[in-house]
Amino acid sequence: MRIGSSIVLIALGAILAFAVADNLVSFVDLTLVGYILMGVGVLGLIISLVMNAPRNQKRVSESRTVQDPSTGERITRNETRDGGI
Image 1 (tube, helix red, strand yellow):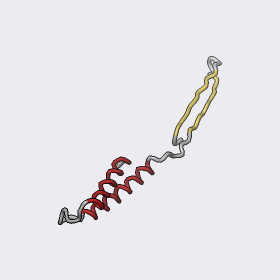
Image 2 (cartoon, rainbow, N blue to C red; image 1 turned 90 degrees about the horizontal axis):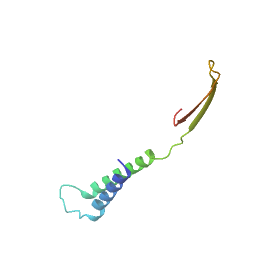
Image 3 (cartoon, one colour; image 1 turned 180 degrees about the vertical axis):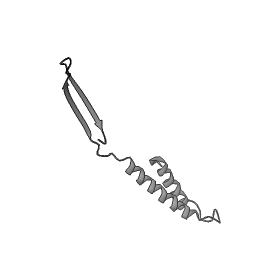
Image 4 (cartoon, rainbow, N blue to C red; image 1 turned 60 degrees about the horizontal axis):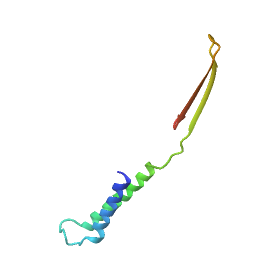
């Protein structure tokens, strides 16, 4: 569930909980359904924000220089890694 769908669930739940008449449907409590949808939307919003939060990412740069034994040429290798090492 993403942020947009969470906001839609919260809005739909608020409409059902506060704006729809209680006696519209006799066998379903629309107020309770609205509160449940708002709760699921808030929970989904919190989870989406936590999952998309920027993490402390580390960039590791390594540079190695070696000399080729046959030609005597110096070879430099640069390596950069992001995230987990």
